Length: 84
Figure 1 (cartoon, rainbow, N blue to C red):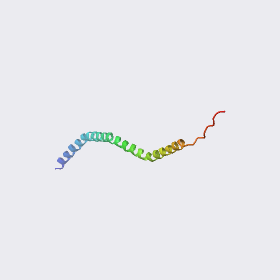
Figure 2: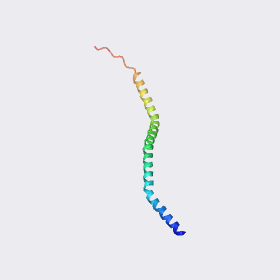
Figure 3: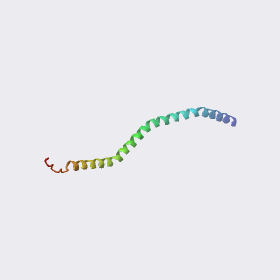
Figure 4: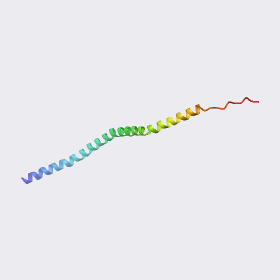
């Protein structure tokens, strides 16, 4: 009976060795497709985080620019003297 189990083990082992490249190829294709789907999503999330992180600085910069424009526009000018 042991000889039968030995042959079964040999046949199963050979089949697994034959199927192993197919399993590796399928896993590689799954990982490649996963990266193709995941990388754009990851980049979009990173861009969104960057925009949200820069929003306060942009807001304060625009506020500062608006104050400068308002101060410049409200500057009182000396009346010009007529030429002699």
